[in-house]
Length: 272
Image 1 (tube, helix red, strand yellow):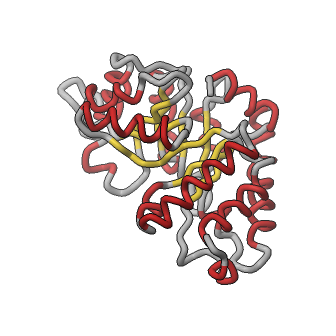
Image 2 (cartoon, one colour):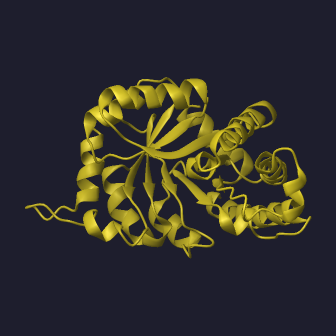
């Protein structure tokens, strides 16, 4: 999916919502456990209920890998279901990969070839040769970890160099030298640090930012839009638990759809 196609979807739906499919079999409604594939049954219902209100889905691979072969089968079925029934959706594999060149090349072929997702989250710690193998696939995106909202972000991401520049800013600047640009690279920036988006926009003014952390994690959509939105929106804002686990009864999908619609309506005002 190109940047323009993604932007047109945002305008058409008046939404930049990404629904995180962090599907935990211990948290899904009990009545689904009798299904042949409970994880896929849950995901399918959530997708059908929310697809009108979002522009992206983000399965977190840890939740599927932890289920072994059955978990990975559910993931592939989920991706195939989105591709077949909602082809305009942008699919993000939240995998946070990053390794030496040969290994990264195999990861890229796995995600963009075998799994057929639009993008994958990548950790920049090992540098250029761990990231560039992901950049050589037309219409596919690297989503580079830049500034995260977890407590441990303070351990490294704010360390300043001799010029007083924090590490996360050096990551942004350096990544632009690797062949990444606004057409094939996005950045993860946590919603709970929304005020930092102003400085991030100075370095990557045109890039899309994947912003997790609204909803259950307490991030403010208003602040994210105030500090991070550009002339073409430039935001994909993720919500996971606040939508998919909003209800645990047989009405779970209906309630998830209502929650997604509420976020979409709020986003529509900012897109105007």
